[in-house]
Image 1 (tube, rainbow, N blue to C red):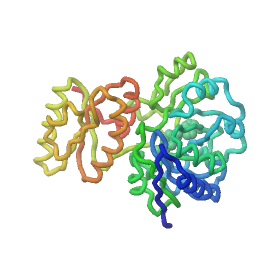
Image 2: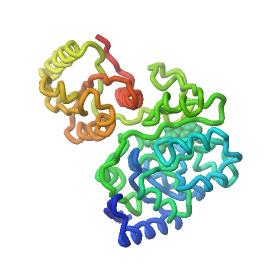
Image 3: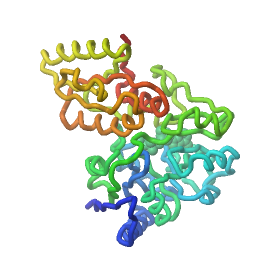
Image 4: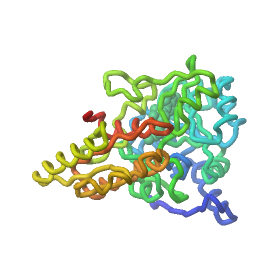
Length: 352
Ligand code: AMP
Ligand code: MG
């Protein structure tokens, strides 16, 4: 299949852009797939209420079919059709953070096919704030099922070129809306349990949810290395975001971390292994690896979040065999950063 790539400026959705989005909407309504930007990462969209579209999404990504998709909507009224009942908490959360990077789990209605929910009786719903995404949802009939627009197991795409890399020839269209703002996937909160439970950390933090709802719990598997415990979000059990090379996180006193990593790199280089380091602006010049990437300033979690997945992909492009990453602090979105980094590293952490 020939994949059409169209460029749209989110800040200037003019007549031409609207035409393109209408065309993209037609593709989705007819059962086709379109990759599109959201504020978190790029999504791979199909009609959420069409079981054939969801099957195509799994096939295009090579995604296990027990890993449910998130249904994207553009307004609050749309939710009523796809859930049994809208819980009180959903209105509170929607008021505070929608449109935005939060996904809510509710009990699904019969309108949502099991193909979309991976066989579950619950459905994950999000209202993205990206204007291209919102218009595309409206043009597509109101319900777009969209996981991240990467091949299963690869880091989520933060730029359209990564969608092209993974999905060229597998989808009808890719909409290039530039680099995304956040860079990590949405926070997921399950509203079918009491108190609501965070299943995946993201830009919307536990503190923010606590403030809005007056108490939430958190799935214990999120930051633990215990692979014996099954996470509540089916997708979280997979080794996502995995770079091709071997990644280890090194945690501890910054000076000692640098010293340890440089020693390991020296050994690996003697063995002829190509090495890489994920550093910060403060430390990038201290490393002797073949490829050193700064994720950003140590105290700027938002910058680090935006850069992380792209860095993992760049290491793949440069065929780095062995990588080390500094551990990042867990303020704000930092918890989500460490959650994704731990998964990328297969929970390999050295504490010194
Ligand atoms: P992705 O869109 O690729 O970030 O993946 C969607 C994530 O949402 C996966 O981790 C899924 O397991 C999770 N998810 C989607 N629907 C549900 C649901 N009904 N219950 C729990 N987790 C879900
Ligand atoms: Mg994903």
